[in-house]
Image 1 (cartoon, rainbow, N blue to C red):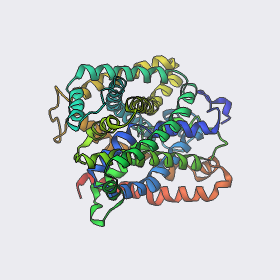
Image 2 (image 1 turned 180 degrees about the horizontal axis):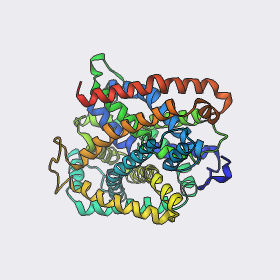
Image 3 (image 1 turned 60 degrees about the vertical axis):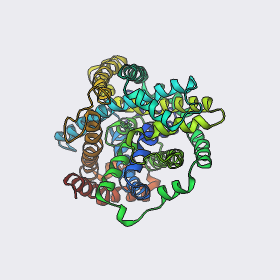
Image 4 (image 1 turned 90 degrees about the horizontal axis):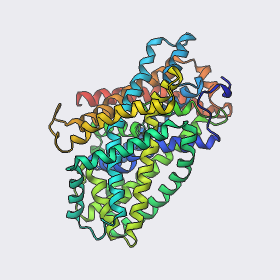
Length: 452
Ligand code: PFF
């Protein structure tokens, strides 16, 4: 399809795709979720399995999603409809983009609440609340935030308003300016802060915890958590990358672009670990603490840092922007679809979806205080959404999408989509997706479900 027929516009330079996709991948998943999932799953063993999952599952599925998006250059739902009209695939496959969109939508309902915590911490950082904070003070600060639903509602609302306003613009316009500055700034500040944290914290325990491992630490639970984390962190299985692939210039090699995105994503996650864990060990914070880990450690780090008030403000501002560039990609699928299918203005479509997310987000934030009762499988509403999306919906969508691409889309069509010089990349990707990623995801997901 000629590029001029694209409804939303093409990224102004091939590099913008890399920035935008990295902007989607790098977010709270790397800085808030990765450290605590690593802590809960034994450290080094998890990191090792996670790297393998990125290479053998995350990267191939990411390439599949982007390639599918670029072949038809439409929103994911219409892409599959188009392929079925051309009798390439059965129309029942339209279930995949729908499930992907629902997954992204559900993730956004809690993602926005956690992003709201980051805005709350940005406000505290600017007010200098972290200065000389003690461990008890940091724990108290986090508990205080969780116990205050009206404050959480305020920040959740502010964040969703930002998401709606950004998605409401054309994506190519709304994103370009943000991501160019954000990513380098985030990497540089993480490099500086993690170096500082290792000097003042327990570096040797951190290195041993993050990079040491033994065979018996590798269980099915660890592998399932690593697959879920890899998909979440790469924003795969939610149609986000599918939608961004639709805007990608044909001049860009998909495998190379996606390889860079995976590298950036892993780098930021490891730096976040090197930032958080030295403090966790020197203050004997429980590594298994879960979602509170990052929010308790960071104030302590900034509290003792000369110029901490300034650095903390910059860091939390970057974190909020990183969350924003991820969140907008979660809404993009539905907004693009409503816009292209029903000619609803992007801003109106974003507003409709944003209000729905905002409502469910209220239930999520209440599950940290007034409504913390276990509603199913011993989990509260937030935990239920988190596990439902990471351990069930994400792997299922990723498996279905990979099967669709690897087994149903004609090989020549995919080959044409890749840059011809990259034939070895194509063979590697196609073979890995077909014979490693799909079987591995199926076995791991099923084994994880039945609790092997
Ligand atoms: N990859 C994002 C992160 O690590 O924070 C989270 C995310 C973005 C999930 C976009 C889903 C999505 F569609």
